[in-house]
Amino acid sequence: MASVLFDLDGTLADTAPDLWQTLVVLQQEQGLTPLPFEAVRNHVSHGSGAMVRLGFPGIDTTHFDALVARFLEIYAENLHVHSRLFDGMDRLLDDIEASGLSWGVVTNKPGWLTDPLLKSMGLYDRAATVISGDTTAERKPHPLPLLFACEQAGVSPEACVYVGDAERDIAAGRAAGMRTLIAAYGYIDPAQTPNTWGADDFVASPPEIFDKGVRPLLERWGQTPL
Image 1 (cartoon, one colour):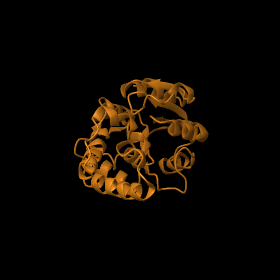
Image 2 (image 1 turned 135 degrees about the vertical axis):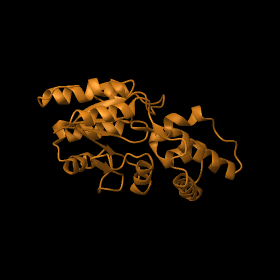
Image 3 (image 1 turned 90 degrees about the vertical axis):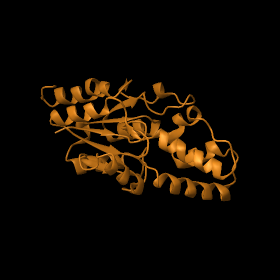
Image 4 (image 1 turned 45 degrees about the vertical axis):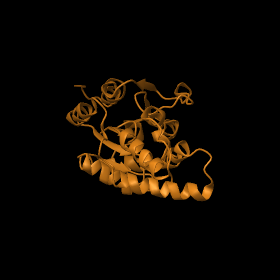
């Protein structure tokens, strides 16, 4: 059996609108003019700390920790307001399942945010595995979360493809021995150089994941693609 594993933010789901809105509320609480969505979207995959630094440049350590805590508090109350699957992802998941493959999520997002979000989106019970940033002793770019996902899904790493939109995703997937795809439609900021990450390929949209990720797995393991 083979499996397709996804990063969450910027790969499986478009969560940027809710994360941006969280930053808007936080900046307004602190008396600042909120940043526009376009200035925030491609920084979402870097985590809550990076979002706070973006919204509050030069913030000192004491205030930084307090603002991160408040950011997470606001976000936890608004996990699934505007977040949704990327266009074509729902059909891709259906096609993966119809082909006899499983799929799962491996994210650095903590479980207390990951699980309720996926449940609200109706995805949690469909996934063969959900690995969050606090599930294992290591986080991406370490391969341990991906290897643990394989154990839970009952597949070998070489029978998996991992799709992500950050360098740590590709590093983790390569170290785990998986085929790796860069979600070029995700949150990649201009300072990043994804062509140097060493991925097996790029996908411009979720439907391309089938041809560049799922189909090679099916052919490798002697199954007939849809």
